[in-house]
Image (tube, rainbow, N blue to C red; front, side, top):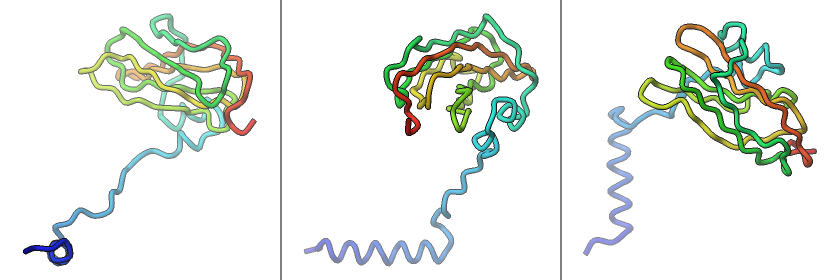
Length: 152
């Protein structure tokens, strides 16, 4: 009869052989651009992403509450019917880290995203669309926060 201890012992031996042969995956080395998340203002975020000068657009719809009761969970949504959207970003102007989220999109999906972000206080929120042709389009809305979510 095979016991659990025998099975674990054999599994460890097989794992050792696979590791010695180089057949086990190495630690995940995710490549990502940390500079946009380290930027302290909106211009630096866009510069770190290599984005062009932003232009306000009526083709981008930003959905956010006028007043958020709790800054720890502010629901945001952005959508556009424009073709060629590469990324959709949410930027919170007065947060310590303005880049709240970044969504990479392909042509196979509709450019519509929603999430919840943390806001330290009342601020302008930007939905930014980075286009494949190099344009940077945005929509903005002021969100008033009654209870800050960033330790306030």
